[in-house]
Image (cartoon, rainbow, N blue to C red; front, side, top):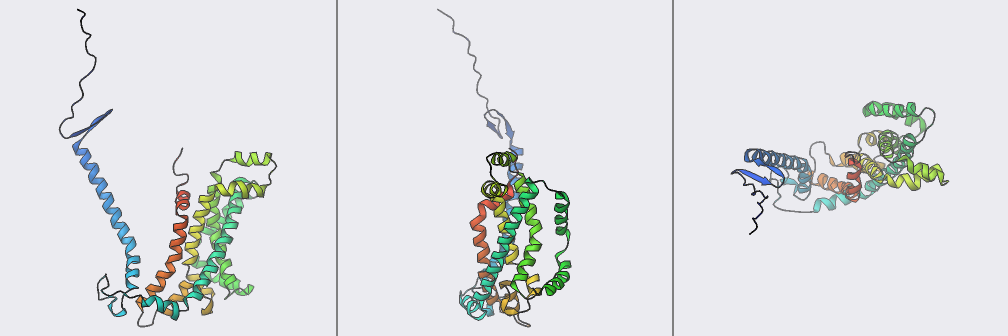
Length: 307
């Protein structure tokens, strides 16, 4: 009889009490696992609390817009009686549609102008060489360090000299001039992440510089474009200070300063009317963000992870 070969297999490791055995890894002690679970749970609780604190003003505004005026500060958070009369009054009594369209026109033209100029400038500073490039770029960036309130008086005098005071065109130019450096800075950062080999190959094929920018580089910078659009739309739609200062005619005011002027009373404020108008004014911002959410998040995280 032939002798059986000795077995070379080892008995399976038996997990000790209080530890979890993982294939190919040493078991994790129960105390460490409990600390990890406790730390993760504390992080979740903190995030939920932060989310609740962030959402509470919007929830309060929404609930206040559907309650009666005499129960705003004495009827609890949840209204006992829901009414949508404040929305009808806001639409009819506040000339809402006219000022809403003013905000749409001012914001749309501002976003388009900023986007066109910022993408061209960002591409030029990122991919082209020309005399004084760094000096011009640093000079534009220094405008970001100036407080906005310090520019009100010089801009007011300049617009008065140019005959642009109390005009929508002048307000749009102010928005474009103040927003362009930051948008250009963002677009330059996005264009710098794109490979130069694409530009060299297109030049070899005989493509012009503007064609390269429009057909090749700009589509690849779509996340950056979405980021600029979202930031610019939110800042322009919610802007209050310059519109209130440079537009003296109440009939051409955008929506936000108009609501501040007509709803805020000297002694009593109609809170359901105000919150209903503000709720309607928030909807365009929500729609724009939902439409560009994926590219906006991709633009914010671009370059955060190295491949």
